[in-house]
Image (tube, rainbow, N blue to C red; front, side):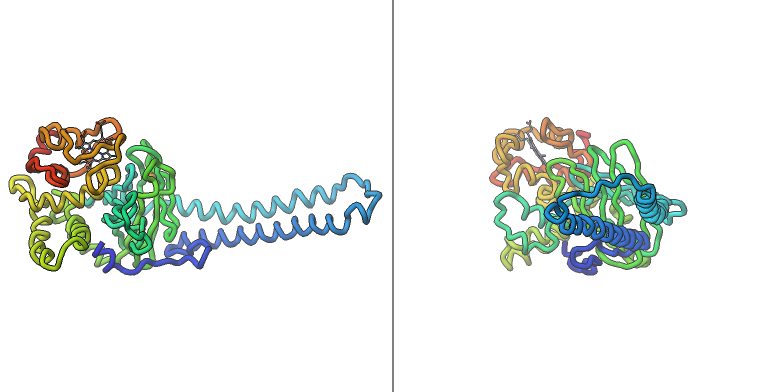
Length: 399
Ligand code: HEC
Ligand SMILES: [Cu+2]
């Protein structure tokens, strides 16, 4: 989130209540179509309602006790068939032209596979060996919890902020391959006029070429279950050189641990309010250690402090929705982890349950070993629990 604050301001090209004009050629065409069809509708509305109101007033019964009884007029019938036909053609031709352009994904400069999950997005930069999950930002997620006590109007970009945005270059034709891992989602970012269903078993294609660097926000546009409202999209468009620098940074170290880069930032934010000034100075080196240690491949086991730090942010992003930030859950459906026999018990059984899920609890096998070890260690050693450390190697052993 600190990164988000430093990023270019959110670009909003909507004018009050209207659609945004957006920052791509297609989005401007969509806007022009929208306005053209809107005015066609306004004119039709004025004529039809005008004729109706005029008839009601000037041909009311008290004025014309004996109604006219003429019948059939070939001229009128031809006119009222021809005019709508012409209007429909005038709408369909430009709309079809834009649709065809939208579907033309040939000659793309790069491809990104987007996969919807309940309730997050996964981005895979094809051919680049860079992929990651993008989930609701820890700050929004904490604020949205029942009785969180947080004033949501004070949370920046409440519910439209993520831990890791989709970073793309400007000026490049980017092909999106959109699919889903579970139910139907829809990837929608109004400023770039991209809205496509993410359907399990299908891959939908669409493309964009963003002209202006900036941050563009969107949401899942398909009712996809309980947390449908909590899977926002953030696209950060960077100039080509900055994008390339970003991509290089992702490749070094990211292959080992997909989420390492973000973990440091949410921790800083999450930990800050609770800390006194002295704590903050004392903890600062540990934060660095958390990022480093956890990002290293198994073999160099992370310290308990590092696991706890990272675990807290993984917990907030993945578990707090059901088990609550303070671990007490929402019984009877979502059990409390405070003093839970499973949490205090055999580590292997607990790892298996988190990896594979159980009944209403979804599987978390898509998280890295480092993230899972951290979150399990966190639950085993928070809220009065004291059940020892789980290392990434322990998680790997259960996969
Ligand atoms: C969608 C809601 C949901 C989320 C998110 C969730 N859980 Fe659970 N969890 C459950 C439910 C429901 C159970 C009870 C499963 C059962 O025994 O039927 C459970 C049980 C558990 C248990 C066993 C507790 C006990 O005493 O039975 C542990 C440990 C646990 N979850 C850890 C986690 C961790 C760690 C995460 C995050 C990585 C997580 N859960 C995310 C719903 C959730
Ligand atoms: Cu969705």
